[in-house]
Image (spheres, rainbow, N blue to C red):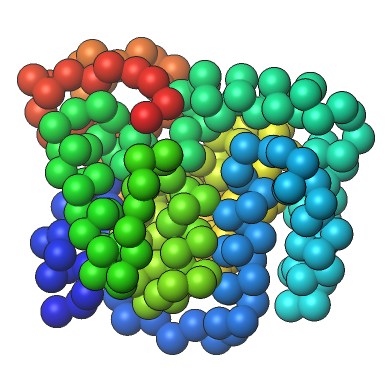
Length: 238
């Protein structure tokens, strides 16, 4: 039985079974994940000071610079307060680009609370103590955990929630946002190709074509349908 399965049980619809995987380039994966953890976080002066080291580290492991150049320009070409305002609009106020992995599958339901508790248990099992600054499924946090603490458990979390990651990638692509490329890089550290569209993600996650949208706005980007319409679906970043 795999590590996460012992803690979380078998994955259901909306999740993948993270099959055994030997990473062909673990150094590249670690660098990409750590870079993505930084670049997907709220932009501040500390991040701007790390742009050149991050760029150099990605080049050293052979990452395609075309995937991040737009993001580096977006971060540095304008006053920081404007960049921060745009980030808040797209990632804090818009549910289309949630950086919380369980939001894409569970919304704000009872199931999500159980999943968040399981994330915390994974971190605790590796000796990590979290404060309350962010929810444990926050993608930059998961990526840093995978890069710096436990590549094995980190891989299992990312692959288990691969449909969430791919839905985020597609939403960023469709809205032409600069973080799309770095999320593509993260997906490239996981086995197999990325799905071409949302229907392919639905199939990956064990759903057929979406047929039930009870309680959901038609523009809602999450995986559908929920298993129970009685749990509600209030919207928000978390």
